[in-house]
Length: 340
Image (cartoon, rainbow, N blue to C red; front, side):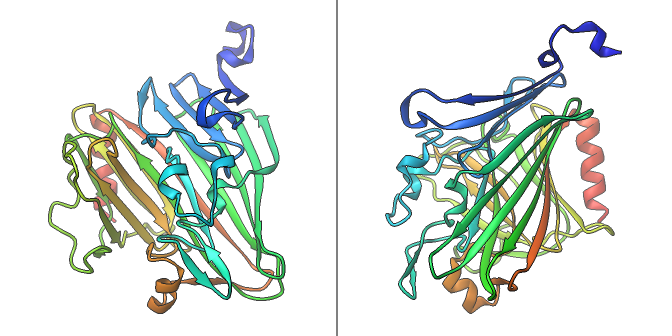
């Protein structure tokens, strides 16, 4: 047994709570997870159990914004400050009442950029070791007096051996009326996984450019070196699923012979949003399973893409983020996706 070789179980699997002590991150609580296969992540307890750090064998995969991990004390949803407080990180949760541009006023209520849920702290958080790794659970409530009340129940599974992390989420409507809602997994990839040697893989399906309303350009899959003052692109893709309803996408770096894949169910996440930002210092690539098209709740409603959660209803979501290591794994993954 491998356990005979170790004195402390952290030699095989690190699963511990930490608190940041300085700068804009001061006071933020997080949970570090690390295994012997080289996968390392931090889950931010004070921010929706979002995934901030993500590295594999010491190589960073995640894009992190200039201000780093910004504490929720600087979060002001009534101000146009999203670009200041948004930390990015590997997975940021968007919703539950708005995804996309904010500044929207409806019936006296204000809806900020990408909603509030991603900056709200989790409660009833439990962290336990299992035979196969670690399991993290918590819930995040979002509601208003005399208004809506939704809850995101989140379960995160991290392996003691392996190269992927899984999110199993459930959104519950705790009110006796239907509630409009939007939900997106903002998965942000950065250097060195992202470079001019990187490209995107996805299944069959069309799409369009959110910014122009026209066709997606022919070079949509290719990444470039950073350019000063380069405008961002935002594409909405269809993505073919397998017979079990799973869809797949990935960012592949040919030079590093590494990739990051995303696996998700299309039943409740019918759109794959693709954010390509090749601008210097904001250099990022987003692959974002979503239930909407990142238009903002007012335009989504007019577009017929703003979903509704029935009274006391709930919906479930599963997303897996993992590593492809080496030419053989990359080739096998690409062949599988192309066959869908």
